Length: 368
Image (cartoon, rainbow, N blue to C red; front, side, top):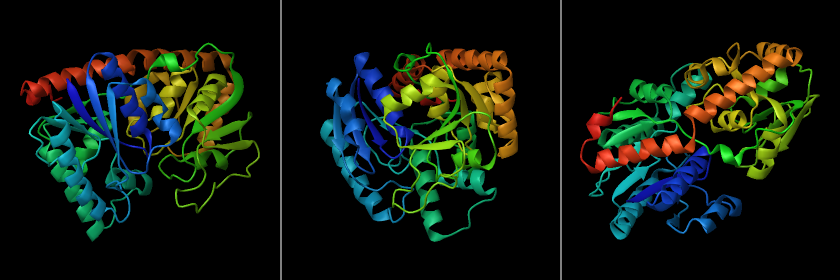
């Protein structure tokens, strides 16, 4: 099977598509991978050297959620239609909404990784104000998911958000993201510190919550502390006991995960969350914000703090620090749940099943 898959380099979508594309080719499929958004870094592209069955096509068109992207979206739609006609895949797997209403002559699916309206509501607790830019974006999303042969979300929460704020897709279901546990170390001796991963300036990731309370152990935050345009900075860069690591390579992150005894999942907006999964695969105890998606994904394998409450986060960390056996218990539960529910193999099985169903013309049978 030959799949044309789109990706972008601005967040976890790149990691997700890498995991999926590499896994598909190891199972005998062929992938043409098309990137939108900022060009990938040398580190991001390094895996392609060992993936001969992945053909990589790089563009630098703006993504649909970016400012002043309308002209780029129009141009990229024409470019993608021509690319599909040229490479002639059996199926098109889209990781953006803007291309779902195009006719490629083959089945197409969209994966909904996030969206502007659910992000805004999660962060601001109200719907965004109506304006021309928002109407353009929402129309783009509705057209995309309405014309796709199938719509996939990484969590039920994300699928429900699509239905609530946009439209109810005819054929839609949940396939959880997956990570290969072999990339992470889960047997190293743990050290007494808290790790969190996320863009410091991102209100959705809310790692700034860590700067509003005190902890009995050091806290490390991995992630850039400035927005892409270079303005703004960490709200707690000088906070005692908290060290901003900045952007880390994957190898550096694996080392931090392996050593950390506790991972703080602070997000107030998280359609899935690859970083908590990577921490769990490294046998970190998860201290998670009490939001619905974390309960859906992690159940009783995480130790929750009161939603968006810095004091409760500090209390949760102090409690686990004072009860090492319980902290170890949560670390084991998180690891077991991650290995069982969120493996790359399971993700691949489900996507390949969906691909076959779409190629056989039975997408509606797949909906959940």
